[in-house]
Amino acid sequence: MQLTFDADVEEFRAEFLAFLAEHLPDEAEAGERPRSSADVPEWARRWQRMQFDNGWLLPGNPPEFGGRNASILQQYVHLEELSRRRIYHSFNPQGLGIIAASLLSFGTPEQKERWAAPILRAEITAALGMSEPGAGSDLASLRTRAVRDGDSFVVNGQKVWTSGANEADVLLTFVRTDPDAPKHKGISVLLIPTDTPGVTRRPFASVCAEDDFDFNEVFFTDVRVPAENLVGGLNQGWGVANGALGHERTLLWLGFADRLQDLVEDFRPVTVLDRDRYATLAMDNQALRLLGSAALARADRGEQDVAALSVLKILGSEAVQTASEHALDGAGFDGLVHPALTAPYTPWNNDHFASSWFERYARSFAGTIAGGTSEIQRTIVAERVLGLPRS
Image (cartoon, rainbow, N blue to C red; front, top):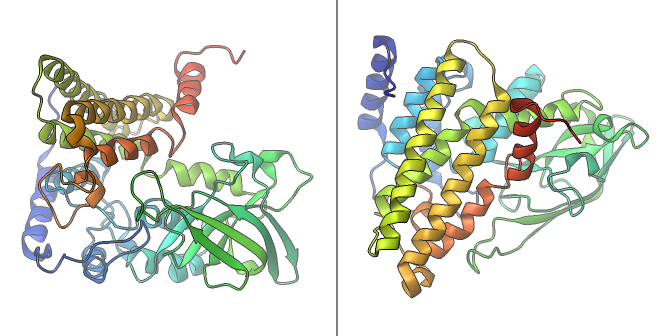
């Protein structure tokens, strides 16, 4: 199968390539590196604003929010050209892909102007407050409470695994506003500035590195949040959550395909076993791209097949994890050397994608957890694709 495009899509691609040739920061300018997924260096802020102002940040958005009303195929070639050059889309990926997108879908006009536009322009950064110590993948079990008090909500509770919270300016926070309602129906969403009194952020290191402080515990102690910061309506948080995790779902598989292509280029097989595993990697890469292209064609025709996209999520995330493990194993003791560089340095990329083989393998687990675990995705496939009974 060969994915081809009409002339308008190729013209769109050519225009974007011309923009990159003229405006992509040079290597010397892009030396400062981010400390977390909500820490955007000043050069990257300027670069993101440049893309926003020219309609190339999120081409599918309307012009006032960094796009040009691009079709799904045009959005695909935009991401394809970024990945070919190993240009990271945004150093605040949750802010761009989930939080701002959720505000554009569910926010009021005032919220879009006050919060979404500044996030997209990298004037502020954002993190997602979903997971809790007893509510990871099971969002409906969250216990962080928000009680209405006049023109404010008073928030008490705790979040964990909150990526980038230590550097973010605002948290899109899921809270329980009706403890008597069924679990799915008593949830709301609040925008909480991180400098609000009562908000405490405690970053902690990950297995990837002692200095990797992206994960956070976040504590809310009598935090007063203006009622105007309620997103999507009172007790409507479940719909916002589904929308938040569903943004760019049609193209989610492409991120895994990019990681597989990186591994095809970076993994150097030596032994017979290495070469066999490398062949599996190459086939997985091709299979994911073929299945993803078919899903892309369906989306372009206006056909919605959200459940089938779970197949792509499972295949992509687990293929990346398997191939990363094989590359680590093939590198032997050298694969455990950290820090290390296992790919050509590209200043516009996320450094994690070129770090030691151990770190690349360790970070592959995020793909099988974030956005719905593999177990959840398999349940969706079983029930909605294969039509199997619930019990």
